[in-house]
Length: 378
Image 1: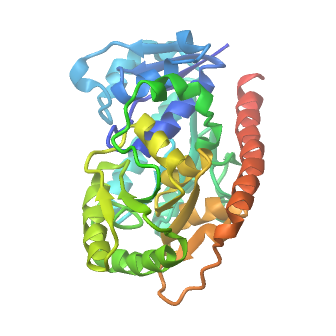
Image 2 (image 1 turned 60 degrees about the vertical axis):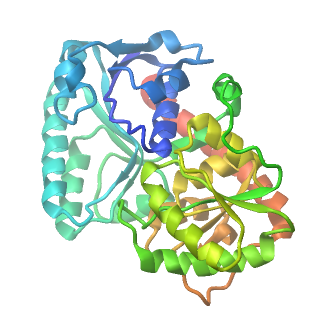
C-alpha cells in the first residue's frame, strides 16, 4: 500500500479547482493513505461521501494559520514525511504569465522541494496539468524540473507533443481529471442542496473576462458578445431565458458586462449573483438546453452532465481548452472570437455530440485509471 501527501492549495473561489482536486484525491485514496494539510470545507464532503476508501484520507492537524499556505503548509506536513511514497502537486494550468520574476520564484520553490524529496526517495507527481506558455527561459526551467519529478502527466496531446519536442523528461499523457467524474459519487451532495434557479426553459452563459488571469479584457468580451448573439439567433427558442452564472468568483464582473450588452440588444437575461456551489452547478447545467462558456471545467462539467457546451474564445490563444476539445473530436463546439468566423455547430447534431463525448469519456477515464495502476500497483 502506498502513501501520499496532497498539499491542500484548493481555492474555494474556483469550482474547477475543487472538482479536479476532489476527483484526484478520491482516486488516489484507492491506493493508500492520503495526508492532507487541514480540512478544506468545500472539498471534504466531495472526497469522502460515497467513497469506500474515505478512511484512507487523513487530515493532518497542524498550526491552523499555516493551513494551505504555499510554504508554511509544509511545516504542518513535516510530521508525516517519513511515512509517504509520493507527493502531489495540484492539477491545473502552470504558465509564466506577465510576471517573469514570480514564475522564477515558483520554479525554484518547486525545484528545491523536488530535489529534497527525491533525495529522501519520495517521488513528486504533477498530474492533470497543462504546461505553458513560457518564454524560452521559462521552458528551460520547467525542463530542469521535469528531470527531478517522477512523472508529469499533461492533459492534451498537443501540449504533450510540444513538451516532448522541447526535451522534457518523465512526461506522460493522461487527459483531464474531470473525466473521472461520475454523478453517482456525488448524488448525496446534490440531493441536499436547493437550487437558486428553478426555470424549465433556459440556456446558461458562464464566461471569464480573459483567457488567463483575473483582469477584464473588454475587447475580448466584445468579440465574444458578437458571436454569442449570432449563436442566440440560431439556438434561442421562444420564451427561453438566458441565465448568466459563474463557478469562479472573478467571473461576476465579466457577466455583468455581458448582461449589459445583451439587454441593450433586447435579450432577456437573469444574472445569478452568487458563486455556484458544486451541487448548484450540476443542477443548473444538467437542466439547461445549451451552455455557452470559455472555461474548460465549466464546459467539461456541462457535457459530463449531458448538456452540450458551446465554447466561445480565441482559438489561436486558448490552448488548453481548445486542445482538450480537439482531442475529443468536438471541434464543432469551438467558436472563434472573430466576427466573421464560420460556425460549424448544428442544433440538429446535439445528440451526436453527446454520443461522441460519451465514447471518449469512457476511453479517457480508463487512460487515467490505468496510469494510476501502473505506478501504484507495482
